Image 1 (tube, protein in one colour):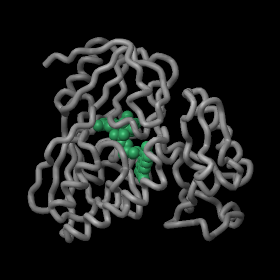
Image 2 (tube, protein in one colour; image 1 turned 45 degrees about the vertical axis):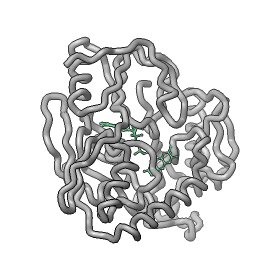
Image 3 (cartoon, protein in one colour; image 1 turned 90 degrees about the vertical axis):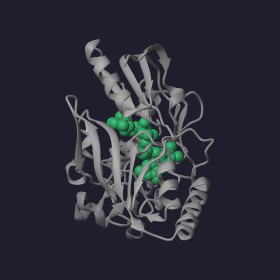
Image 4 (cartoon, helix red, strand yellow; image 1 turned 90 degrees about the horizontal axis):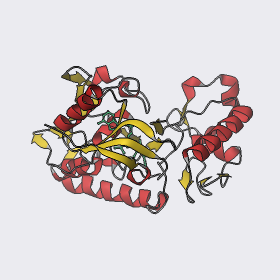
Length: 308
Ligand SMILES: Cc1cc2nc3c(=O)[nH]c(=O)nc-3n(C[C@H](O)[C@H](O)[C@H](O)COP(=O)(O)OP(=O)(O)OC[C@H]3O[C@@H](n4cnc5c(N)ncnc54)[C@H](O)[C@@H]3O)c2cc1C
């Protein structure tokens, strides 16, 4: 199999935040086999490489990335369904996986409705919403570890809040297997529609953003003294919303170049005027400093900086 690489490709249009420069080499692949081939090609050509998929949680650097940027292009392809088990390619849009689950009356993913991006991207970032996480009903993941293709069971993926082993290792997520529970098709479809409606009011699809910019803060990571300074009514499910901390330091509406904090949500950065990676990291650093000074809490990015 030989893949044709493109030169000098702009990356910003491939993301929801629309930030970033170009890739000197670029390839878009749509199957796990091609993804592995792309990595092998990078190795043969002695090029550094990075992988992304739906581009809904990444910020690319302004300068040209001199290696090979690989997109595991989102592709709708039927899942393999057997009883309570669904298996799919990692570049399946998460929305398609949920649609398949709901149409078979399988419960466990419906609260993730409306999260953009692919199944693989969701696994890497351990995506979640409305009390459900992608890892809840995941059983195993097929990966390429740089040498061989193998299956990891869920335990080996080291999932914790918005984290997985895939954020620390250069492994490719190729396929995923989920074991769901029996549910009522109509109830699940209604739930899914309701969540999409709530989300569409919160995230206007015309806004260029990567979703929540910072991770919420786990209560267990914060000292008692710090905790005592916070409005306790804001703490939910053992987490301090980053949006609450940011709003308390006056983040709403703050701007750096073409990037601004939404005036309706302290944890939403919007690119409204040719924002750059430089603008993003400058604004992010300012916000972190303000939260650190007021609360003594370190915010960490949920978004991933890639090719910087
Ligand atoms: C409007 C909006 C709302 C959002 N709401 C939520 C939410 O409610 N909850 C939530 O958790 N997230 C949310 N997100 C963030 C984002 O949608 C998720 O993190 C999503 O799962 C990312 O998938 P992706 O395919 O776009 O990944 P990308 O953005 O393309 O990549 C994300 C990371 O995963 C890596 N990656 C992607 N695919 C692979 C692969 N196959 N193998 C190895 N590494 C890979 C990339 O290197 C990168 O580090 C939101 C984003 C937006 C824009």
